[in-house]
Image 1 (cartoon, rainbow, N blue to C red):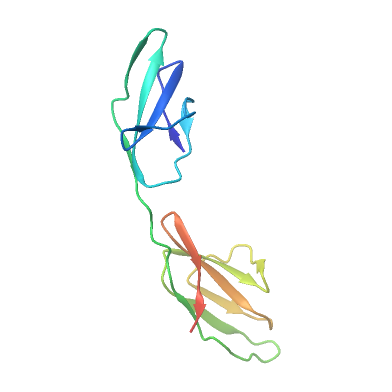
Image 2: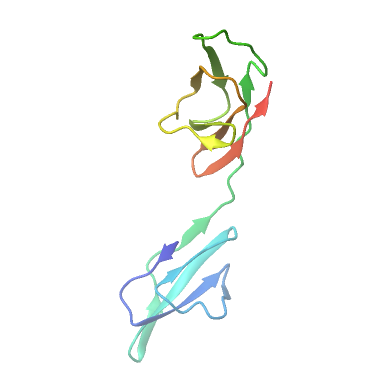
Amino acid sequence: MLTATGGTSYQWYKDGILISGAVNATYSATLAGTYTVIIFNGTCSGPASNSSVITVGTTPTGTISPATASICSGGSQLLTATGGTSYQWYKDGILISGEVNVTYSATLAGTCTVIIFNGSCSGPASMQ
């Protein structure tokens, strides 16, 4: 979300081209590019003192290992994810609250998955 201040109305531009209908103080950028805004206050107007450059991030990729394992009653299996700076683990498609580390100790049978985060981008791990 891009935000401009200092005016009563605004006009946003992407790469120097007017964005039709983008006249609010905030604009939700969904494409890569350089965003600028003209700020209006009464009959006066002027450009914002800076611009915002939006780039497209890369979806992180990584794996979970081991891909399959067996655990004995009361035992556990340490699973390890790769490819990110943070993680969110799931068991059978349900979020496991608080499990956000690179490793997860599985104590129950089921399918464990993980979402890999790197900056503001995320993606699912593949099995190794």
